[in-house]
Amino acid sequence: MTHRIDRMAGEGLVTRDRDESNRVRVIVELTDEGRTKWLEAMQMATDFEEDLLQDLTPDERGALGEMLIRLLRRVEHAQPDAGGRLTDLD
Image 1: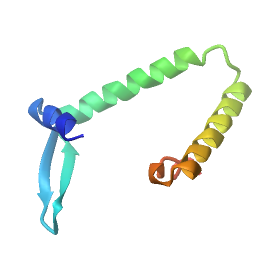
Image 2: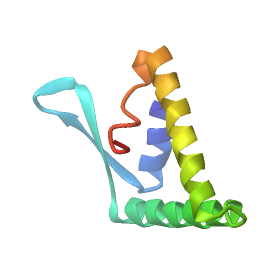
Image 3: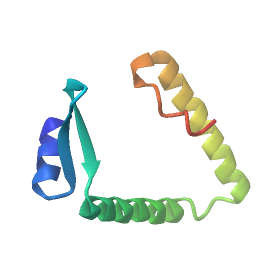
Image 4: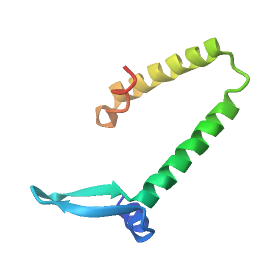
């Protein structure tokens, strides 16, 4: 992770500062350029997903989403340290 953040900081995509209340913790934030790149990546992912799912009906898409959530819950149950992905899906 450190190498990736180093590279992103070097490219001007993120800033990195020490947390004054916890010197072990580092706060990483997107710059304006980083936010722009992130939004571009999210749009590319949305376009790819739409292309991938174009042959599914809305009901089939819903069923697929529900099945994927069930699988993710299984992963999180089996690996408690992998938690946190589902909090925005409930």
